[in-house]
Amino acid sequence: MNSPSEKAKIYALCDVNNFYVSCERLFRPDLQNKPVIVLSNNDGCIISISDEAKAAGIKMAIPYHEAKEIIEQHKITTFSSNYGLYGDISQRFNWVLEQYCDQVSAYSVDESFLMFEGYESNLYERAINIRKELLRTLSLPTCIGLAPTKTLAKVANHYAKRHKTSTQGVVDLCSPQQRQWILKQIPIQNVWGIGRQLSKKLMTYRIHTAWDLHNADYKTLQRLFSVNMERTILELRGQPCLSFNQLAQPKKSILNSRSFAKRITEYSDLREALSYHATRCCEKLRKQGSLASSISMFLYARKHNKDYLYRPNLTITLPEATDDTSIFLQAIDKGLKQIYLSGEHYKKAGVMLNGIVTREGYQSDFFNHIQQRPELMQKLDLINQRFGKDSVKFASLGFSKNWAMRANHYSGNYVGSWHDILRLK
Amino acid sequence: MSKVSILQPQGNYSSIPLFSGKVSAGFPGVVDEHMEERLSLDQLLIKHPATTFFAKVDGDSMINAGIYQNDILVVDRSLHAKDKDIVVALVDNEFTVKRLRQRAGKVWLQAENSAYKDIIISGESELIIWGVVTGMTRTFR
Image (cartoon, each protein chain N blue to C red):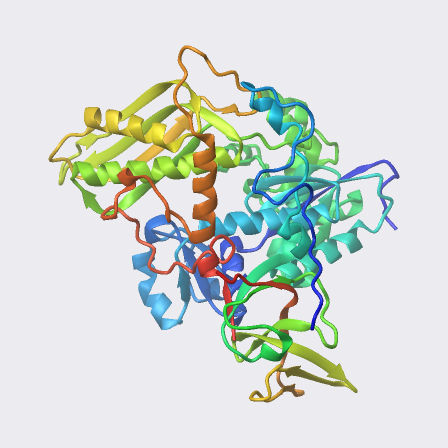
């Protein structure tokens, strides 16, 4: 048996197949084995495709309207994106992984690294179990790559995803003997950290596969490229160079923006849209226990048939950091008056909060003290959590929603709103 | 008559958490560090947060089990269903809540209301158990 030595560190990369589609299927088990797609914000492009939809000829990132014919012909179920739901399922995905491994580090919404220390053997069995459990308890189909470095774990995962049936979704590259055969089948552009540009240049040095790169002289390539290239080569050889990156940083800026379903010209509609974005940003801010001290608002307008762009951007710095929505709404009122031009056709608006500090231990400036109402904010968040988004809101959020985004296929937030939870007969 | 025993939350009944230690006026930040834990219904109802979901009852097929229209069920997907568990199952592509019965190699779903027939799971039909109902909650006003 090719078990790693006792104190070796083994990395696993666990990644959910067609994540957004899989999240929707969790609450729609009737869609198992049926073609499903998920659209981007505003129902713009196709951003997640089930294997069945792929087989029907749907391609990633194409505009929704271009695919309508295939969608109707193959009866493909279509969903608008539901990021509230996907975020929740992503968190649950990591919680389940933590039951199997002390050290889990989320790499993106649908993939996480696990680090096993001092395991003698049978990580393969463990990976098979993790996979089964994620499928059983969260309906999430996954692939897992095992290896002594993160780069090799990525390679293993990639191979598992391409050969789901023959590998059962788990590929173990812990022993060097298995590596050659698989690395030879991985094109160079699919190696972690090698983009399209780098792979073009590497091909001029006759490096076409991961195995070619594995065998390359890393000192020469470091001179020709960078220290990152050297690291990638060593990682492919099984020498860990990348740290596990234990902690996820709290967000340093919080952004909310959106394109309008139709062009907007009115001041009041823009004010409503910006207020909406600021409200969402403040909710995120309070959720992570932070305060922000500046707010930027931006608009995006384009004149018909001309290359003329109007993209104003204005930042207001507050006398002190806060998480009080009403203070940011006042700032929007002030700021929008300065950047709004009548007669423009606005396409997009957004808000970004910066200067973010943790609430804990924040020293308020006595002389610049602004009236804050943390209890009110807390109650607002609670009520909205219980009765749905914006049950209670500030008047500037308005009621017309002329600017609301297109989401004609929204499935409902099964985990974030009492109104939307599953119904059982 | 059924007996009801009341669980007293720590301290007194109020929406304000119980504090221990001194509270200095003017420095509200100090208070947070001395906050003690309160009873939480989440803690009572949810054993496995990663795999627990809520669902709402729409119908009267389980009234004899004390499950009524609009009750909120707590569904744990990590548990393996066994005989007599109340489960969320998928029947004819629709979610349903019923009691799972397994005896002598037979499997069926039982309603808790004589107006409903058992749903027998025969050789051809596949039973998908989505989760096991572990708790329930209801509000009166």
